[in-house]
Image 1 (cartoon, rainbow, N blue to C red):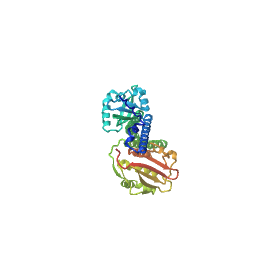
Image 2 (cartoon, rainbow, N blue to C red; image 1 turned 90 degrees about the vertical axis):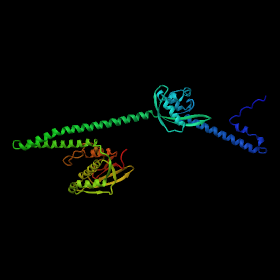
Image 3 (cartoon, rainbow, N blue to C red; image 1 turned 120 degrees about the horizontal axis):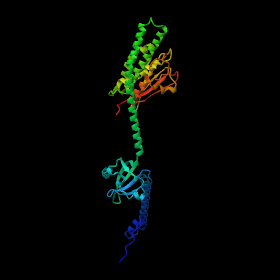
Length: 405
């Protein structure tokens, strides 16, 4: 019997299949073909080696699994390290060995979808060798590998990111709850303080009116000081009540025509404008934004009144209102020629009951800008200030062009 020929090696496999007798007189062609096929085979092997190197050294966990048996054929170093197995242990597992028992049916269903071409990333629980849980963002790509149906699984450990996001969401929820409780407390406390204050003020005024002749001048002065203090406290409580109610308003957002808002405000502020000989310049036409009309009106009123109030002595106030579009927001600017302020106060002025000036020179509760900040925040915007001493002030704030989702 004739012995069977040795199987060709990978390098000369194609060349041995080419019979030179089929190409008489074309030896050069045969050699060229043999050389070309050998080069192609070499390039294929080099390409395969590059892809294998990228697979093995990819920083993201990856493994290949057989679709029939669900066995893991090969895993890269990142996957083996992440799950805590040795290479030999890992490649003896089925993919279900990486799942908790209650999740295995869902995993089988997901793999079936991957075979049908569904390769979007999903977030799923995986089980490490020590039994601990990790959260993975995984995607699967189906392909045929030497007649074998396999899936390439690419995964990313998002456990820490997920925990951080959960912690952040919890912290935000705690802050929101705390703010609601604080606003409710402020409302209740302020409301309950109103009645005794009114009683004190009434009796003091009655004492001052009915016993003027019986009291010394010094006593009358003390009564007057006390009445003024009670009135200031009432003003502060009214301001605090108003501030706390801002967080409780649940009006529907609607289009707000800023042209109309400013027209109405100029009428409402006409006395102050005439008294101070103020000039207000409006860049028209103003845009339409969305939000709570009453709050937006108060925002503009507080800022315009603020610019008129803090003007230089013997210099008529000049207030200019401009705007520009910033993506999905409108950025407004209310600038003036007033007394200005130092940079160190830029944040302080937005805090409740914070005043930079003497009450006798510039009366008020010190809550107007705090209300502005809260209104802007309620609408998902930002407010900030730019200023310097003697050079006026520019208040910038943003309001949305469309409703929040």
